[in-house]
Image (tube, rainbow, N blue to C red):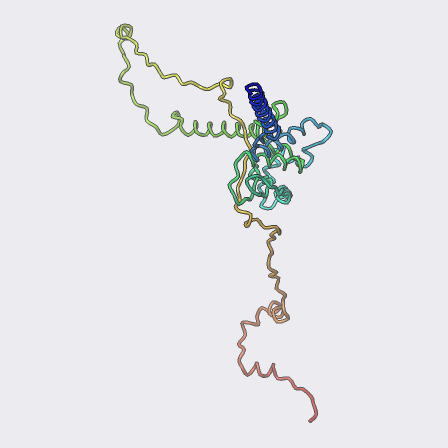
Length: 296
């Protein structure tokens, strides 16, 4: 009786063990790997960034073919921008990009006068998303030099317009400093020159008198190696919501104010003494009386 009982218990434990092992194995096989969450904004930025940097490898395509030569000549550019309606602004405001971003839809175009990307959007769009949309814009419209963000463009191939802009800014800074120095100059200015009473006139006392030294505080200037370098970035101008954008082009219509001279005005111009003569009602009746022949 004992042996069959032990055998039954052993088989029962073995059956339960293999059943548990098989269930665990099925559960492990039924589990799917967890999906890795990817931020839509980061995915959008990476996609545009890869497509933009790929243009520097494709040497067969000219991605600046749409940029007019006047952008590279500062004098010609300034002369064109003086005009209220110029060719550059008219052309580039018609080159519009409609883009759907993770933060909402935008309408984007380049503004030559402000030298930046103007856009319409209903929501607040961060700089990183706008920068990615600008990458697509310059690739579509073949104007890669308009993109001046140094943190994105390769170091060996910066924007040609950026160097021109930096030279202009340096020149303006030097001119501004020169004007300020000229305004603060005391040689020819109306400033009084006061006498220095602390100056020692006795040569013997001057040799004996101790010299005072002033220790100025040292200012630590960040260098490029310590991460203090400043990078140029793109300019984005928010023009309002999508409802403010007009699809149709607005044209300034001028009213036709041309006046045709009548026969009366021509008669008065030919006879300048006409208004000086006295003209009464009786004379008017004589001149206005017209006989119309008709039969009753």
